[in-house]
Length: 157
Image (tube, one colour):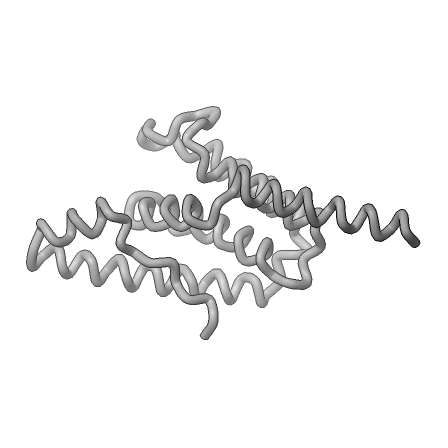
């Protein structure tokens, strides 16, 4: 029993270190909001599925760590194919996300997909509102985009 408790504590510590050191909430939301309107919604959807699976209380620690590892790769500026290459720059990111989703398929529940869809809808709505602001005042739009002013959507509905 003590050995099981030690493994549980070590797993919790590892998950916390991985999430804090390699994956950051701030970096994730900056990447997601920075990509709105520039990449396919499918890529954003897959990243949000993993994010919502990782924060879901019923997802096992090992699956959370795997999801955070894929999300860390997604937000990392160091990629196998740099994101600056138009058309192919996100193929490696999408590949990592899809392979991880296949691995964690049983943890990508309908509930996780619904939460991810709600989040993506909120983000796209905020993005469209910024687009309307751009039509009225390009300076405000650019300042908001530069400041990554699209806030993290509230996941509680």
